[in-house]
Length: 260
Image 1: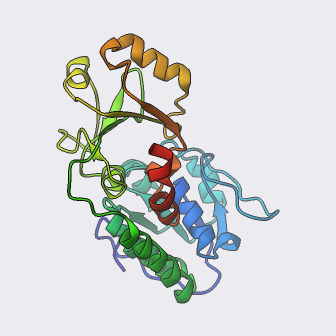
Image 2: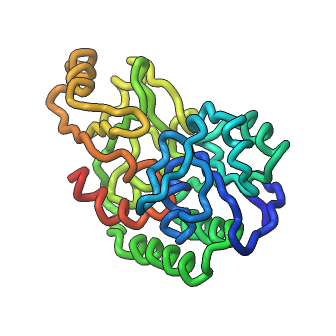
């Protein structure tokens, strides 16, 4: 099997020792029934269900390679957006790495099936999870009329957002919103004041992930851009916007309500 980079990673059966370097991948492995195989995760990854702990090995952008090596995984799961190429290449000197890269909601079922095969999950479990996402996609409204234009932030000092070639942008589309930067210059990019002023959003989104936005940050934005003060805004659980994998079906069901 080849990962998102085209690198061959052989599927493994049996009790593989798995490490995962991004939160939504870790959650998906749990939901695939593989919690007992996980031997390392990042500090940002959710803890496993039940009482058994899983050691952490640094963050997504700064994994502790020595702790990861000491955990002796025989497979590491990484993501193209979340993890740095140089870290993946360093890990590959002592362990195979499988890299995911879903950029559309429609990519997620195949990503889950690939994760299930490479990590040794039961086929019926992976297939059921993938089918649940497809069903949630089919339930989404397919209104072809004008959509509210949403400006979503992912960082501040400076403010950052994302372009159209991203999972988050496509998810907004499925949930009935247009990303104001769907034609943006890059996948992720900083916003200068002129770009923000020209964006003409109907709604401002302040998720709590990857940056933990709160009401004071929204107030700070309105002080910087008083012309936007009358716009509605939402503070919400950012994992529903950015965590692709088993959370996708919940995002398709809950995000429209969180943003309404």
